[in-house]
Amino acid sequence: MDVGRVRKQPAAADGPLSRRAPGGWIAACWRRRWLRRIFAAAAIIAVLYVTSSWWLPAAGRWLDVGETPRISDYCLVLSGDYESRPFVAAALYRRGFVRSQIWLTHTAMADTAPAEAEDSNNRAKRILTVLGVPPARVVELPGDCASTFDEAAVLARTMAEHPTATVTVVTSNYHTRRTRWVIRRALGSSADRARYVSVPTDYFDADCWWKVEEGFTTYTKEFSKTVFYFLRYGWGGVWIALFVSVAAIGWVVRRRRRRAIIPAITQ
Image (tube, rainbow, N blue to C red; front, side):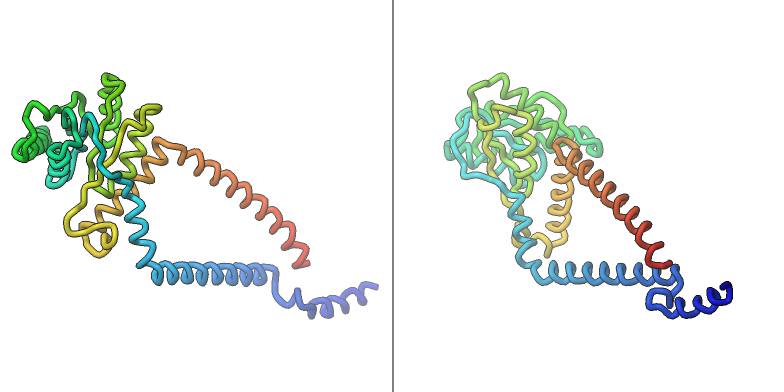
């Protein structure tokens, strides 16, 4: 009986599943899986490249949520891009879209020297006054601001002192979506008292930002900051944690099933 068993072993070895050793069969499965992943990644890259003329401008326009100017009591000029933002604020004032004051925030960036920050604010004031805004109507709000989030907090404190006032927020077009999102969170139930006016940029816009080095740098930074703000101050972290948890559970279940199937196939 032992001899019969020995003779049957070569016949079993000729079966379709046992021509390869268990390790070789597993390696072949992994190779096929990685090939499929490589082909899928190549296909995705090819589709993105072919359709880039559509989705790149769409992504740039998505950042711009500026509104048609309306009459407001105040106008807040966010820090940065002083070569363009104060000019739009002055135009709004001259055309009667600002009833009272134009507000500036005090820049206190970690990588900006105090003298440079003060010079930027003074430059914005000079631009506004040269363009016809009375110096008494240009007011710097109290509080140091190192980010858009800080500026939104300063605006919320100021608007609390003017419970019925409206404000037009002037900022660059690519910056309006993140600005609106942060200010809405800061103002809460009073968020509808803020309006947003987009300021165009020089040399690039939403339809060609990836073709210019400065535009590519500016827009990619804004995309990354928008994601960071969503994760840091919004519900993005919760959604990512939920997704990672579900993915981890799925990975564990799939791995256990694979461990149970492979021995049965290789026997």
